[in-house]
Length: 243
Image 1 (tube, rainbow, N blue to C red):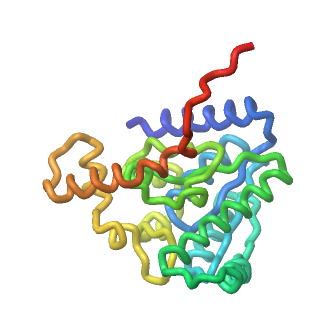
Image 2 (image 1 turned 90 degrees about the vertical axis):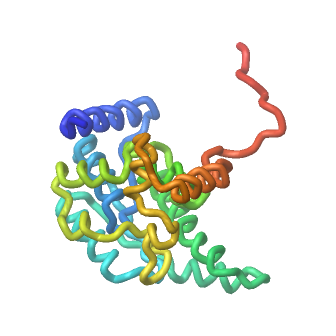
């Protein structure tokens, strides 16, 4: 992959998409990880003066917040910090039935997406997605949370390609070196939660041989999460309108 050509192509794609949508710029959540860092850098190249980052801690690690700030300052991206901890607590206190840990953790990305869309509407910006190809294939995202966006410039990139692009875009090394994590709870990492290494997922997507048990697990997760890759189920397809 020619990194410069890939970067230029994605920058032009974002510029064209925003123009067609008659929007004024781009907004994204800054997590302190490599995916959002790469998307922020691409957005900054596409719209030097019309990119807005939002750091949204919700009982998050202090390190993630600091990395998010460092990234925005390094890229010269305007940003704000919106602490969602009180909103999260209010939901837990308001819901009658006690929620299990998974249900609780998914509140956080849905609150973040609600926040992004509120600010985006005020600014007439489009919301950027930050999920890579491996995450999308595995369904490793929260439906109507981090899986919701207007446009995603890295949805086709495998994890090793995101790392390569991060280096090309001069993302701070400490962000590149962090273990991939959704930041849902302290010590959480993607690979530990999934039980699959991203390198194995990349090999699978590249058509390389992987351990049969790993292959089976990847395919199983893909099938089980198909509903996440659909906007909503329809009773009947109404088809295109005729004018």
